[in-house]
Length: 180
Image (cartoon, rainbow, N blue to C red; front, side, top):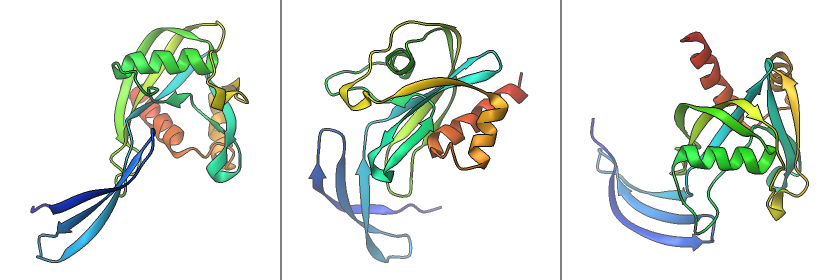
């Protein structure tokens, strides 16, 4: 199958966290158009599993104007880098205080590939040892709580756990459990 061909590209916005570009493209039919693309660094989602449930985090999410439950997640701060597994361990420790004996990579997903280049890796964390959190200033209101697997699924059904990345991560967890 033919692919869309990029004719030109220009950056229209940049911040420390993202950039937006407009690409002039040509479709296989010869029709031309514009793609607006959000470029953001990849991130991780971590499922901290213990005692038949998961540790969730909740914080105020400004774009939607309310506190939301989700699995710990995040990307490297400016000037830092490392492997996805190192990032998963760092985010888990930062947001929950836990150290994991094992981190199992469950898969790589795209955040919103219709408009963004960003992807994310999903990890299952087990063998959790508690410790202090190390929250960033933007996460000062974050709390973490353990919830049974069944309760997490009920929260999804009731719209109380609506982070798409977290819900997709749970689907990868389910696939992983079925393959064992």
